[in-house]
Length: 182
Image 1 (cartoon, rainbow, N blue to C red):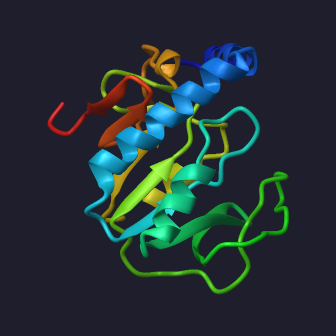
Image 2: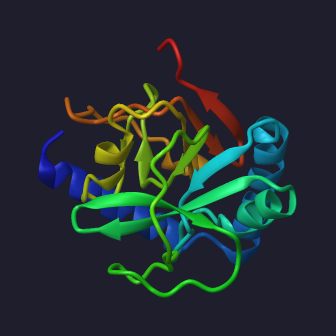
C-alpha cells in the first residue's frame, strides 16, 4: 500500500469515526469496557493510550484499572519517540499533539499489556496509525501483549509494510480478535 492509499484510508476512517452517532459510540465504548474487564483483569500493568478526539475512549478503562490497583502508564512524546510514564490519576498537561500527557520520569521495565490506538487494522493484526511511527518504534523488542483498540468498522484489508509491528489482539465492541499464530 503506497503512502497516498494509506492517507486516503486514514481520512475515510477519521470521517467514519467523526460521524459515528453519540449513542452508538457510547454503547460501543461500554461494550469495549466490558470486554476489556473480562479479558484483561488478570494482568497487573498496562501501558494505555489516552483517548483523544474520536478514538475509542480509554478514560473508563483507565479509571477501572486505577480503582483495581493496577499499574497504569500513559504515553508521552519525547522527540520522535513515545515513553511510558506512570499515571496515578488526575489532570495531565497537553503534549505536542494536543493530547494530555503525564509528567514524571519514564518507566523502562516490562509492562504486561500495551493498548494501542489505530485508524485501521487488517486480518493479520497489522495496524495503520496516524503516520508518525511512534508505536511501531516503541513496540520493537518489547515483551508485552499488544492490543489494538477501536471500533468494528476500523477492520479493513490493506497490505502492511515491512517495518510494521503486528498486534496480538484487536479489541472492539464486537469482541476480541486474536492474531497470535496467524
